[in-house]
Image (cartoon, rainbow, N blue to C red; front, side, top):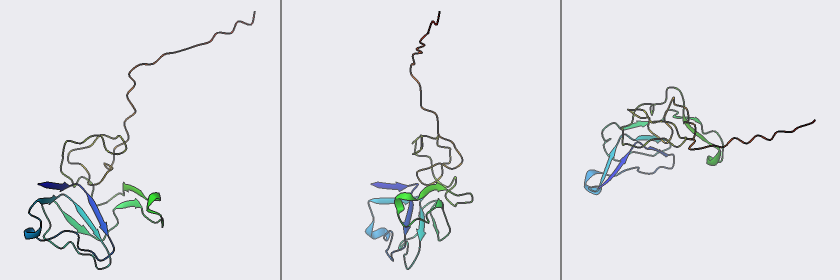
Amino acid sequence: LYDIRNNIIWNNNGLVMKYTTAQRTKIKYSYNIYKLGGSSVVGAPLGTGEISTSNKIFLDTSSVNPANWNFRLQNGSPAINAGTYVGVSPDWDGSAVTNPPSIGIFNYGTTPSPPAINSFRIRKKFVNNN
């Protein structure tokens, strides 16, 4: 069984995003957001906690090149605290994941944790000018 949770699935190309129950007996969808445009459709009933929207979700997707997009959630995004906790922490930025988490790779409203320092050495060079 494949369990697809806490994802943002974006499509503007007129595709069907998921299929009917008879066609997907080994896939379970829950707590996903479908950002659809054009003639795209979800194609099957929404699962537990799922949302279909045409509203803006991310901070910035205005660049022609998706590599330059900012996938952090904008204030008011339907993805904020809409996920289900799956035991994964930290998020992509190294931030702690809240419960309930936000849907997507960045948890909303948390800041990245500083890296752990296991050990360090202080070296100081003294210069004697006398």
